[in-house]
Length: 366
Image (cartoon, rainbow, N blue to C red; front, side):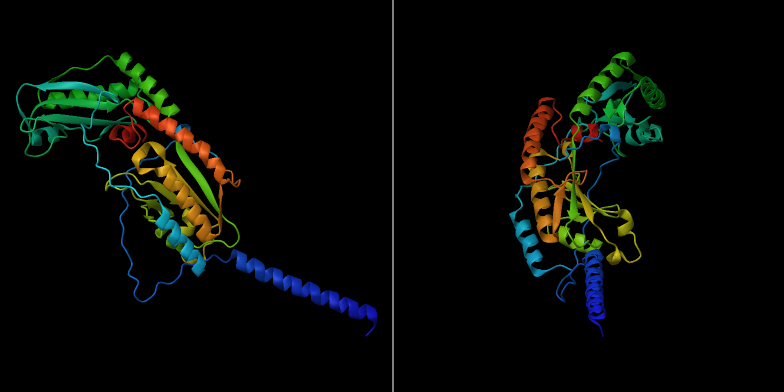
């Protein structure tokens, strides 16, 4: 064999080795990491999500851009233990209708009305256009406003429609629909309604909507795989160590609030198609979305502090990189200005009796 032939053979062998090595690396990189199989003593836990939130139109969305190994398990566990602790918060109790965010029309019946009669007179739908519509009765026994209930006796009623939500402000057409529904209920129980002036209420709705639009904050960050992709099971296993539970929708995990029935503190989402695949463990996930709906969560829960801790824990455990919504890596120091802006936002909401996580704030920012 000549020197040229020998050289070509060596070069060919090297190229072949490089191709095999590259294919092996590419296969490893694109094979999603899978969840660790539980031991014989592990027991599955069943969870139920408390997630009453609604859809969020984009015109009211403000975002701030900004196979498991033992070492990874330890990092996730240590990070979970280091998450800030919080104490359970009492749920707020107040009338469903409130003049701060509702148009309210008093309805005075000629005589006592039973709960059964009031329920039978209610309209089939509880919305006027895109705005929630409600009727409350003053319970003769408790002297508390409440939705009509069987067995109750009511001496007066009030009908209301919400001034604004994330779909926008109450308009003249929606106000007119509210009047029609309330009038029909009043006629059925022989009550005299007293409706406020439409133009004044519509103007008040626009003012409230402007305030809400300027103070509606939803944070969304991206967690991207640094090298190997993740399987849905791998994501769920690591998130579960931090307190996340499956949400109602496929590809959605939530961190529950401290009190039952409240919206989740944080949401972790990934590709729905990956969650619905015939063999989810073969689905490759390369990015997650970690989000916080600021107005829906009480300030005392320290949701942004928990978001930062969760993001750091997941990046450490899963070999991920925290990015903004455009996929640009986000340094830790970039989160500090966001925290300062949030404190100012909380103060402004408190000053308008619309504290984050309160009943009124959850209704307005929904």
